[in-house]
Length: 367
Image 1 (cartoon, one colour):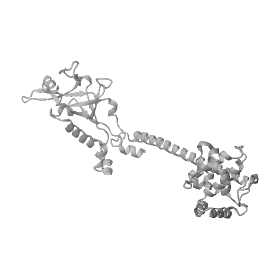
Image 2 (cartoon, helix red, strand yellow):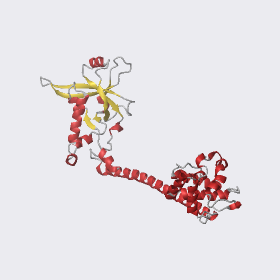
Image 3 (cartoon, one colour):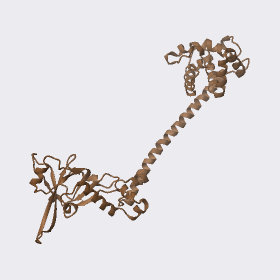
């Protein structure tokens, strides 16, 4: 650095300048400054208010903070320009890994070695030291580099945002296209299990049927009807597993309110809920036609679906359905129904839950 203000220093005596200017920099900068260690208070690290162990990023932030504070165009202090040149000199050395390593080595060898380093780096008579114009140019280059880095970060952030939005949009379009083209494929768009009341599975099944056996029968029939040739040729035995990945719902076709009735009171005023009445016809041992009625208890995990009773179908969630034999009122209700009450109850949910779902293959392909 030049010797403005008639300051007499040793050739390139940066330690001398640091001693006269840098040691009180902390108080000049206020509480935001980071005071240097005592043993390094006259080094280039002290000029930037950094510890010798500081990282490059910490040095960069320190240089930016100091240069903004001591820039002659922003600071009226008579010594601002001298400080600004010293700060630029410190940054020019400490920002270069090779120069910093050589400088650190000179510090380790003592003050004489440090002065020799300055003489080598800037000439014996400071002929290659920073002047005011060079310090300003270095600062402008730093600002331009900071702005370029900020723009690169902004471009990356915009690119990430565009990529995420594009992924979401194309995934939705792919799913909608798949549904329009392959909406009837049970593996791509799994449907609820199907059963009918009337003369269907529930009416013909034995009274002792439990819910797990009912579910196994429905799943086996569903797989046989839903899985096509390409499903098994492409996926083999895993096709059925993928078909059952959705929560198993059961859609029961009914004949409106004719198949539904209120359950007996059995200790609760207003009734215990509703019953699904299944009727099957046949002949007795004498050849006379007869109809046998079986009752299945219905309950609502939440509130009753709207409208209730439903006109054409019930939607049942099998995972919430199960045995009711352990209920204290089951024996009383079974006696009032002539012993024709199944030992399990069905959890009735809104009909929208029995709508086709997006299967794992569709979701993976769409994404």
